[in-house]
Length: 266
Image 1 (spheres, rainbow, N blue to C red):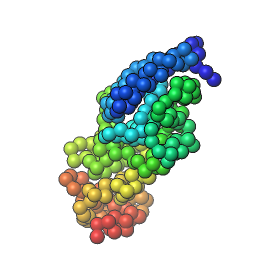
Image 2: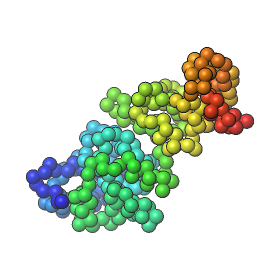
Image 3: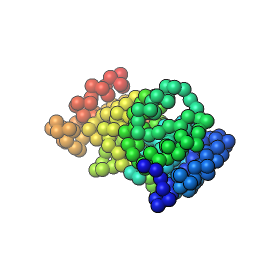
Image 4: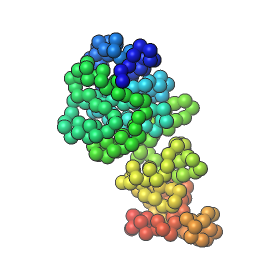
């Protein structure tokens, strides 16, 4: 199905750290204006700036470079996927067949530099905002071994990026997860289970509602738990707690998770 003038023009945003590459894409977009009505709503040379602007501009499609300094296109797409109204992402790459083949098996499209006008038009015709983005990005990121290096936090109309190494623990509370750094707390909407899978090398589960940064654990101590630890009858009883670097917070360790934590602090 082609894009026609009866439809609303696609709102497009370009992200590429190379100025000539952005200029090339804009020229191509101009060339295919008749068959793919669109409006260029913005562009950026680096991912963090792009994330902040995209949150406000709400484009339908993002043309995104894969390799950029600071944050890769894969990681940026993962952050976009946290938003329920995520745009469609079309990756633009000049890199090897390994990356190319990884993209081929997913709903997300890719363009190989130098981009041809007909190929860009075809990609835009098939782009659907948000289509399969979360699952596809997670699978591609796993194949390319490019885990996220930041957590995405929506706060007061802004998108904040919190570096993963700064987070000491993740604690599930109702439908939110609290991210605790030495300085403050942040709230994100995510499942603790998905975070545990994504950041398994950085965090360890200490309780059904808490993950702790492995590098932040400095020891354990005896303490009194005020909750039922995973239905094991420990309410009001003495139990081990995690001691964390730089903060006074203590998190209870459930019986089920104690062997893994004990092995870590030996």
